[in-house]
Image 1 (cartoon, rainbow, N blue to C red):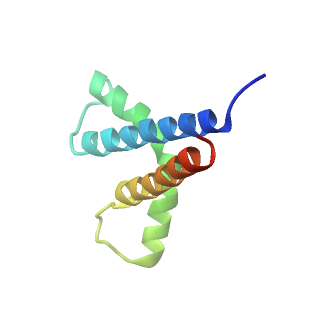
Image 2: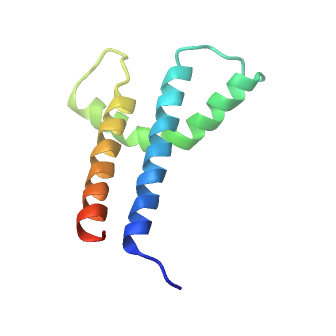
Length: 98
C-alpha cells in the first residue's frame, strides 16, 4: 500500500471543509420551521443528527462560560475551531510533506 501523508492530510482538510458546510447549512435551516414530514424537515433532521454531537461540545463550553440569553453561538465557535484545524493541517501538508 503506497500513500503519502500529504494526501491523507489533504483528505482530512477536504472532510473538514465539507463538515463546515454541513454546519452552515444546519444553521441556515434552523431559521425556518419545516415540518418533519417535508423534504426540508428530513434534510434538517439529517443535518442535526450529523452535527449535534460536535456542536454540543461547544454549546456546553459556552454555557459554562457565559449566559447568552438563548442565543446559540456554538456553530460559530465550531466553525472557528474547524478553520484553525484546517489551516494547521494545510500548513503541515504543504510545508512538511510537499
